[in-house]
Length: 104
Image (cartoon, rainbow, N blue to C red):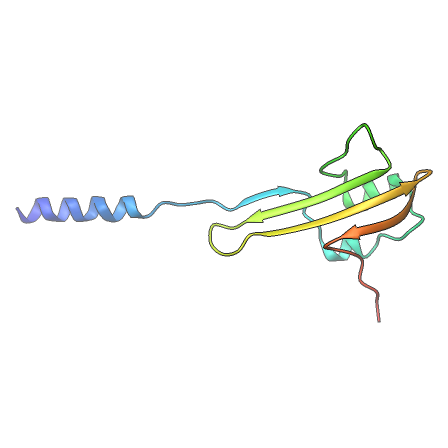
């Protein structure tokens, strides 16, 4: 009887330990890389620094979307986005939750 109880207890303990992996999607944007982006840069220069955008539609090649989403196994989800607008293959403006920081 005691062995049956130990087996049931250990089985219950093993099934309670379910691993849930963190989920990461999109471009991992580092602030140091984003700080290198400036208006007037070409698409090729930006792709060299940040890589290709996570979302790029063929309908509007003048806007690039760098999106990042992280859902850790524990804790709050995080997301970042950087939207770049081009005119004549040069960066005109940026928007989003992550932007270049000005150096002091």
